Amino acid sequence: MQTTALVMKPMDWAPLQDIDDVKPINDGDTACLQAVYDVLKQHGMQDRFGVTLIHKHFDMADDEVLLEHTNTAERRLVLAPAKLDSQEVSRSVQTSWMFGEVNGQIMRVCNRRCFTNVWGTHSDGGHYSS
Image (cartoon, rainbow, N blue to C red; front, side, top):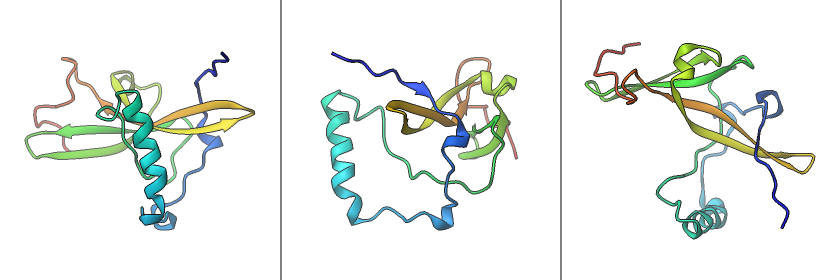
């Protein structure tokens, strides 16, 4: 059985459309989403992975990802670009990936992460503000 490696996909191979140019989810997506769900369920992962509408709101540099900070006291999430080599990104969990194929190899790129504090949790105790 041939195994295909899952490798990281550089961001410049996957330009995102602006949110205003992305067609919202509609009834034409039902069969595809059902197939995705069926595969997730087959592997027992339907409560672990989901689907997101791939888009952008602004341009980002090749060495940036969106980093999510959580303010539990105000029940607020803040997404902001962060440099891949930053201390914050090194303490984050990958949360959103795009998949594609280049020369027959399956590729993935994480373009969104969730910040983890020094205690290993995602809440900042309500101290983060934008």
